[in-house]
Amino acid sequence: MPRGTTCPVTRRTAACRAAAVRSGTRMRAAVLALFVAVVLVWVSGCGGDTGRAGDDRAGAAPSGFPATVANCGVTTTYQRPPKRAVSLNQHATEVMLALDLEKSMVGTGYLDDRILPEFRAAYDRVKVLSKEYPSYEALLEAEPDFVYGGWASTFEDGRSRAALKKAGIDTHLNIEECPKGPVTMATVEEEIRTVAKIFGVPDRAERRIAALRAVLERVKARLAEPAPAATPVRVAVYDSGDKTVYTAGGAGIGNEIIRLAGGTNLFSDVSKAYGDVSFEQLAARAPEAIVIYDYGDQPAEDKKRFLLSSPALKDVPAIRNKRFAVLPLSSTVTGVRAASAVESLARQLHPDRFG
Image (cartoon, rainbow, N blue to C red; front, side):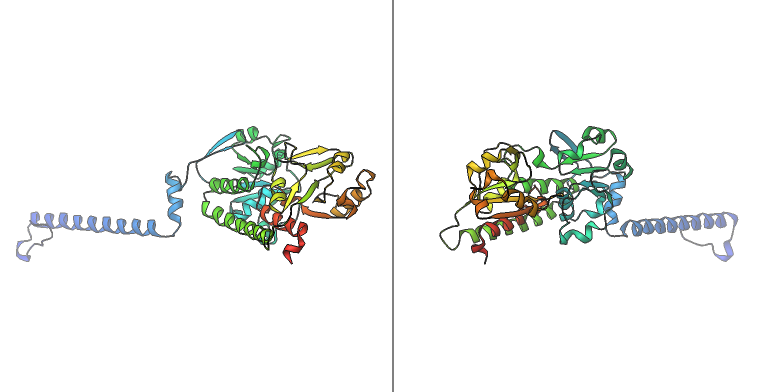
């Protein structure tokens, strides 16, 4: 009997009735299979971005992954973006927030300054693990899968990168702590791009870098016009110290900030990012202005008073003229404040260009 036919009333034999039953069963099975297929298609298509999560569960790597990063002697391959990151030190935290990564953060710690206003709301949504560095045990309690440190001291006192790796935690150290050469604004851009690569957000890095470059171009134009270009001011950095001067050398971002701001770092021959020099050396080089790094429990005004009272410096032009410039420490590192530090310092060294 053909599929789908029925038995005439006058021919309802047992064979005909059996064939009809078989035909009906096949039709019900086909309808059920069609219904299940429609439901599966509907479920898989719902939820918009949940498709990516489905890919992750199935084992498919997100776009840009796996991503391999060589950082300060440690090479890490990220199969997926970190989801439970901890940032330690201000500049590391602000790089994360500048890339809109607060939803991927489970903790932070160790500020040197107030968080920039543009990042404050995002920062307030992240748990502060400790005022300074958390202990290794406290860090593990946050269950991070990634720790980003601004200073090498992040990974000391039991929090070594090797120990964290053994615990299944990936790490990244700000590139200024292990430079391949003098740190420049290109290094700042590299740091931002690298963190964005780790989290799979390269477009965000390019937007942030474009904004930093716009600030630098604005400063460059002010120092160049009207002609002639502004004459570089001879400066030295006073970070701290009462027996010696802890100053900015030629290898760190501080030297680059001074150069781009229309200054000349008189201790650029110090081969490190920072170094100690004597007060006699500072006096002999006769800076026209002294740049004070403001942080910690010794305010900039206290540092000014100390320098002004030093007998060794009384004949230094910067001291005689009380010519100081002040930068917060948080802006003198390889982070998202570097361009604004250039503008701030340029305004202090060349106020006539920024009227």
